[in-house]
Image (cartoon, rainbow, N blue to C red; front, top):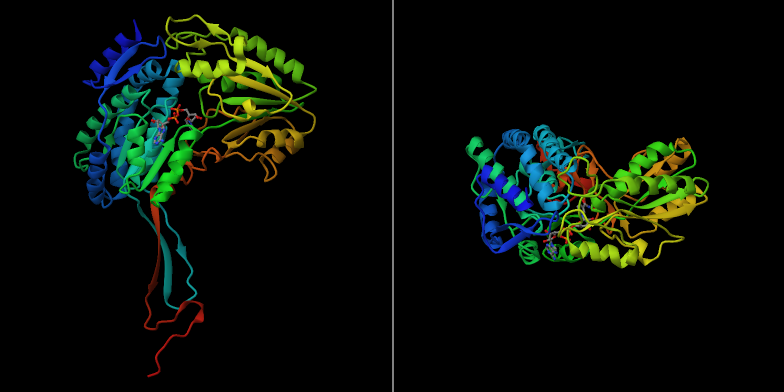
Length: 487
Ligand code: NAD
């Protein structure tokens, strides 16, 4: 079946009737698979403001019930939604199923969180006084998402934002609008079951960059959570700051793995294949730089070349495919601009851009290595000392993910220490990609500094209020200040 026929089947099953001026193509064969209508950001913001008035006073555990129902629907719809993600983003079905599972996992997390939005009680320096912190809902949240995680990023943000008491407007990637339509079809059903959610609580606004910009500039939006390229974040960050809004940026990565002489090379090789070639090198956490000790470099590179040559490149719907297509011709051109004629195009499905992942040995990190090329190119660098390896890891402007393969405790602890990796994520004996939702996800430097998903990331979606309560009859001032009119 062609991607267009399969997409039409899923839309019909989900009773989605979309049409409009924004055409979306499948990277599998480069042909159109659907159309959606461009949304109205102004109207969406007005509806979100009205929804916030009501939703912020709904008890948080009741808000969690809405997210629980969403998780239930996702469990049912998982295979179809995953299929749509594969058709639109080109990632293999296994990875799409994993992406939807991540949505289910964050739903479960957020339901628990809805009873754990804890504040502190703080000792006051004044007699008969009590201090505390409360966390209140923040306001309308805009989620701008990228093509490579077309649905999970929405779920990371939306489930937390909802239990924290905020309405959400979603501006998905213009390259993956049908996956977003499928999610919204589920959201409509879930809202019906829930019963009394305010109108405009969860909205979808389709469109290109200009629609994103309108939402970014709208002072009614309390938080803009934007996932995408560093170039996008460089524009969005200052625009939100100009109106004193809050921003959560999840931008590009340029992730490295260090392989030490003590490493289990078998384990490392398998992890490197997944991290470097999975999602056809189009994950923010994709392994792009392999920093390997000079004593084992020849052995490791030979193993990797053999594995890279063996991995099946092709139609991401086929069960034996490990590497699907690049998202579009621009991605292929970006890869070609680095590799020139050495880029190995694979004839898999007519109209799609399929490539074999490449390994490129380099002696230092030039401007190509320092930037994120969103394609499967693995640069290999050799090192002599662990300090040199860590310096190479940290030399790039991005700071998302990193990892080390070693069985030497001193090396792994140094890598995780304050003098080690400068990234938001640092792993030991696994690759840099494939995070779980329980941890805070995000990175430093040009990756934007935002944290999403687990741990205490929920705080980004709330405003903190400090309260001091006087239950005595005197009025002592802080710091012992005296300020009285003589009687
Ligand atoms: P992109 O920057 O081209 O687009 C991302 C989203 O931003 C899209 O919805 C787009 O319409 C919107 N957008 C673009 N310019 C905008 C502007 N000026 N104002 C408002 N919205 C704007 O990214 P992409 O090609 O879809 O995705 C790939 C990039 O995303 C890579 O750099 C990857 O590393 C990054 N990414 C990061 C994370 C993370 O969590 N750090 C996760 C996924 C992807």
